[in-house]
Length: 330
Image 1 (cartoon, rainbow, N blue to C red):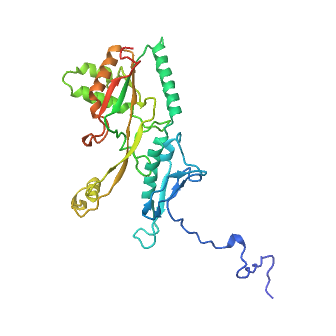
Image 2 (tube, rainbow, N blue to C red):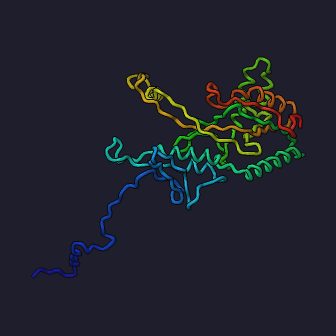
Image 3 (cartoon, one colour):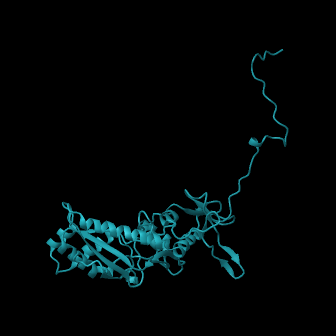
């Protein structure tokens, strides 16, 4: 008789068909259609495009709790913290692979245009009053005297600023305010624009340029704030760029030599959607010296027809004028 001692005796397995719930094999199916990834995926759903009687009907956008994200939603979250993906369908070359959904990018752009990137009239007015109070307080500071110049910049057609800042998954680039998420013209862009014009003008003295804009060893006398929507929302519109030889451009970007794909007419056009804005921006300059402020404002006004991307296609040309109530000699 074998000696089992205190060794445990294996328990018999449950009969077939009566396995406990924790041991039941579950087959997980990948969801069909676009899905949302990111920190808000628990509350956001992307409505996929659907097939209608006369063709594909575009989705209406994002929804959360039964209601669409409306005015006041922060575009930094809606654009930069959400990715919309889908799995390749059976029978296709990418079957089973997860990839960013083209419908997702269309939904992102559609939301941006319909909701004006979350711009809300009351919030814009409140932020404008706050900035006015801050600038007027700077002028009244007895320890650090400061003067302020306000200009109004309006695109003659549309403005495309920040196309290269593709910080979101779907590469929808546009310069947005770091707190409010509204479209802005970065102060660095305004300063660089005025500096480039001043350096190229034979009538501008190099000493004035160094004093106003600064050098590697000292700070300039004029500061440029980010340009904000002036009292009302700017209009957000989608546009399309359609390169006809995308494989050639991709091969040039990735290197040359044997990997270079020659451009040819058999390449398929690939539409690329991007965002543009039009409307009036408040441009604020500040500094202690009245004359330097007048110089910087004058250079910016003369350089205003070259701001932004794709100026050769008509984007970015600005009309810059003094703002009523904010004379250049404050």
